[in-house]
Length: 260
Length: 216
Image (cartoon, chains in turn cyan, yellow):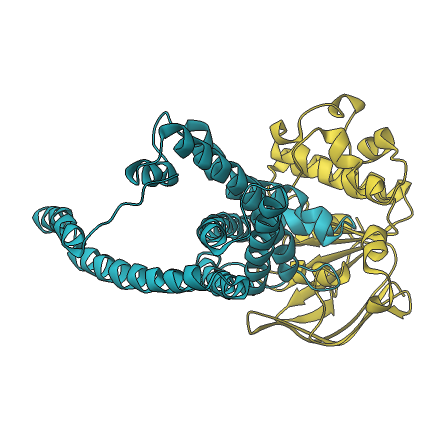
């Protein structure tokens, strides 16, 4: 059992000294990031405090409908955020929304069905948040690559379509590359975990007083769960989104100009 | 009549590329000549249905292009684009790609020979060929589909004079050996006359027959 630790607001305030270090470095080196450091500090404080109270409420209620509602909001914001990184993909929002929802729902249902976690708010909320967050990054990276590859490879795609290939056949190599782009960062960090860095969950557990073995086991579970969810998110987003590049007659649409 | 375009307009990026074009394209070898940006490549893309007109119609052998199954149509009206765009893999894999899509056998050596390549090219990596050789593989890849119409977009634009002459000889031989109608787009008036049974000029979005058309 993890021994709960209690942190006062004073300890949080003390850690701001390190934010001051970041600000000083920025000013000293004229990196022009002090404003961003300030915004990041204030936003993280407000957002995490707010979500902390929401999670506290949901833990107290322990009602799965509240859990589902919170995760749905995360999926929605995740899709909106990821869409900005997939600017070259037409109408990327819906594929992203579906990808995050599917990855989140499938992963949580599986871990509950396999008995890894109990169907309780205190497990589903943090695990769901991690799954959706990682799924969002993977889907955004995959669609970003897809948009770039379609723009760069339009001639190749049309040459293949001209031979009577369907849009799906013409896109096969690009879909494979996009899927790999979405999955590789997590696979690589999973390979080096424990050697080059300590993952966040394990660090949190150790700080909270868990035994190292328990911390490692939970971390392993999460890493394995994330591998599956990231694969699902990248696969779903890429395979739905590529269709938006084509008309029903297997014609490559005029590509939108990336904004910003 | 091979193709009949009636009041056909095509826009791209809000700009009119081909305004209300009306023209008939006949069987045999037609050379379509015009300056860069005249819409020649766009016209070939429209004939292959890689794009559709914004208004007006294109008929192929008496039927609207849109009434054909688009995938079958593209195998029947094969387009060889201006720049080589081969798939990673061997020449054989590239040439047999089209027939394999529709479950047909590929007469690899015949397609290579028609494009002026000997059978030793089959196992070579497509990416390691010269531009001229890649262009011939693109031609072989289209010929492997045994198309009824062959659309060639600037087939020698990226080649030096010697390679250009060799490709022109290949195309003239091809014209004798296969029954396919050929439409070749070029910016080179001389080439248009050397290759075409008839020469059409596309300029400012209008097509006119070349007044002093000369057979090659």
